[in-house]
Image (cartoon, rainbow, N blue to C red; front, side):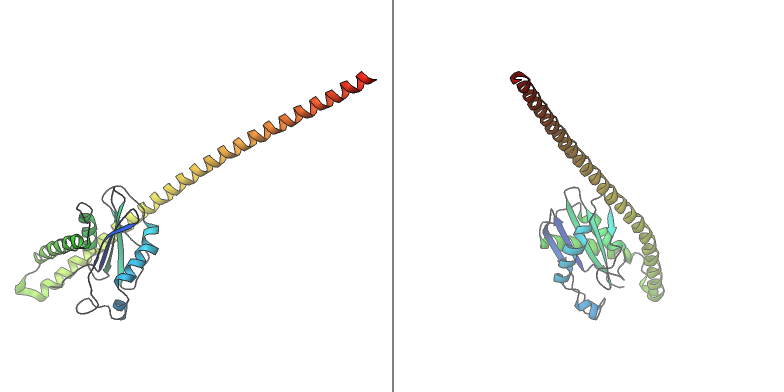
Length: 228
């Protein structure tokens, strides 16, 4: 049976990288040829920093979002957020069952991942459990037929997950737009208050100027009448 794994995973907390995991798949099963040569840790780090983190929408609950735009040929990108302002970003090859990165991001959020070693150990454990579950669908006596059945099951899961992720992405976009709308409303309110204060001071200055001019005119008139 094929062995599946994610390629890159990064844990970011309040802008700082806490832990990273990289699984070199540029050779052997899962090789991407020329595309695989570009799939280096440095490339993934730059993609996360420049293209993923700026678009992350923090959503309450145990939810995972898939980036709708491919960031690197041959790879899908997923991210999840936790209540402690931690973001988990995962890259996996497009032929990896989508349930695996979703499961990784979901389960990793509930355990400590304070170092590269901790993160790698947790990833290996979850991946091993995933393959043990896949083996329950595999019958060694009819390997060819069962392998095809397994691929059919994976394809069905992928189709269902794609539909779910599309809905999840729409929810994330709605949350993001609502947040931006609330921020715009708040900024507009603050600007309106500043304009109101500015107009009030302008009215005060205008009234003060009119009073001063009136007093001066009266003084001049009284003085002129007095001397006449």
